[in-house]
Length: 122
Image (cartoon, rainbow, N blue to C red):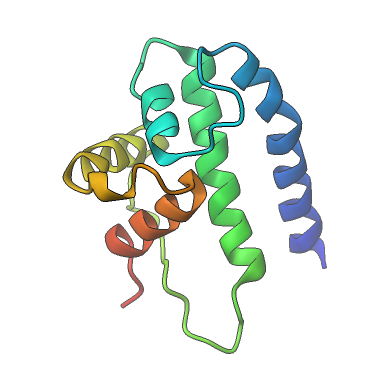
């Protein structure tokens, strides 16, 4: 129950700040595509955009954990040596360049694909 409260709190905070961060960027309104996320996350000098990207990725992962069937084997497993959030973001951007076919899909769906490809459970 305690982990549910923590997960719910983190997810709520991400959602609360989501509209504020998007308001500061020059993205088309209501664009939740992978392409829009990649464009936002590429600028390492935009601290607000970087923080949004970190929070969005964390929110997608926490949602995956909260919604996955506990009776089934997990498909995403981060280990303590998976790297920093900056490193994981750069891996995602590189992966996206090799997989542009997902650019029109929703960013959350593409992030789950990336996590499953890069951090599979063994």
